[in-house]
Image 1: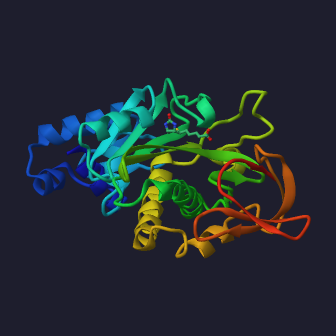
Image 2: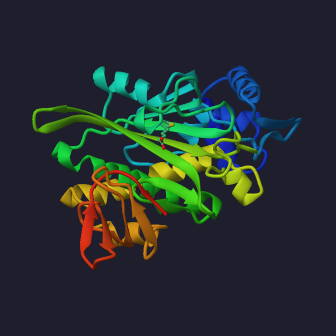
Length: 319
Ligand code: BTN
């Protein structure tokens, strides 16, 4: 019911009488009053004026189950939505849910992670009230070999979702970091479970720095937040909804061919490395070259100093 009340107050944008809410929801005035009280406790500012009713004062950056459900307008992401005020890691939660049979599109979001995971075994600091910590359960019918491309799609969905919801022009640093003015705003960790030749599930986990006012000394030079770049607070639920929307859009295109052929142009347009010199940190030996964009398999094409073009399949490149 809280989700419904939020939806109605948001779409009206004005006062809505208690009586009208009761009629629309088919519940008592006490039930409406109780739900409004709970929403206020969760952080919403809701004005109650005699003879006029309730009005939602927009702006609070609240994420709750009801807030997220009222903001999502996706077809299949979030049909099952699991929200935690606090959890160890949304990826770990999503994995457990997937093992228990959670359906394709299950979305897990937390306000705080106590054991957030980064790539290469690093931890991911995830304080309350400031970031987006979200993971999805996907069950694509395709070869495990193609799964790494889902990470590229997540990166694309983040930059497009951030643009739509905030106006900020984030770019992708191959393969899937999202950067603003050269500093990282988002990291993606994709985990997978496979069975012989097929995928049981894939969990793309997305962490976005949203309303941080600063970063610890050791990452200050390389990390930023949407708030620091925009100069204003950003509503996280709006960004989550836009990222989910874009992920769905790009995923559906991707699944037609199970490769990046239909998304290559969109991806390359957002690629910060495009046309720039990159240093490829190949374990067999580093080399420099010019980034030409990704190919249909998601590999980064790099023209080496000797003129040959190499396809970088995995690993790191630095700008
Ligand atoms: C990176 O190292 O760049 C990847 C960081 C990924 C962090 C996100 S936050 C949501 C999800 N849950 C986790 O434990 N990790 C990912």
